[in-house]
Length: 89
Image (cartoon, rainbow, N blue to C red; front, side, top):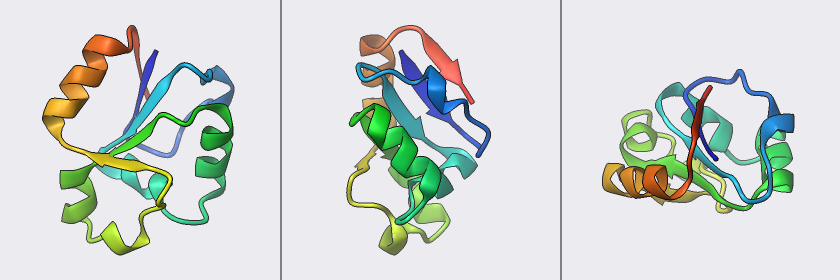
């Protein structure tokens, strides 16, 4: 499953080890260093990504956790085809 997170409301218990998580829109704030929710998500799955345009637009790149991979929109399309279905948060 692909979890797309656009805000801070998420049920972490629904994430499994074979799922992927994409932080975008305002959800990119969850991908920052020392964020407790990010630690909980990474304990569930190592497949965590953040949309580059949203990080840069908010000036958050220096604060981004190194365990999260920054990706572009074409990569999100690829992830959508690979991880099905999609859960929006």
